[in-house]
Image (cartoon, rainbow, N blue to C red):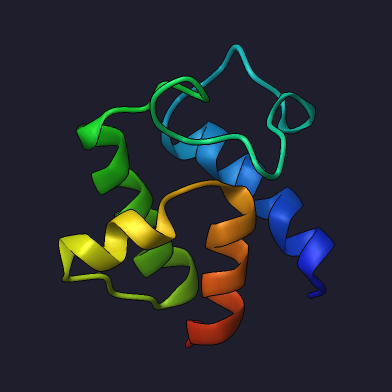
Length: 87
């Protein structure tokens, strides 16, 4: 899977995992922040994203500092997955 496909898949997974039914993958820019002014996600959502990374890509994030570096936007998550995926 190339990076473009991965980013599309991530957008679909984020919408599904976080039940963001009012959004489509096209509504989420690759560099749109997950938290704050972007998608407006909260700390519970960040836990769901960590579960998504584990279930879908075999990536375990235990350090909160690492999580903050990874859970920035779709682009950052895709880069991290490409470097660390085990599935």
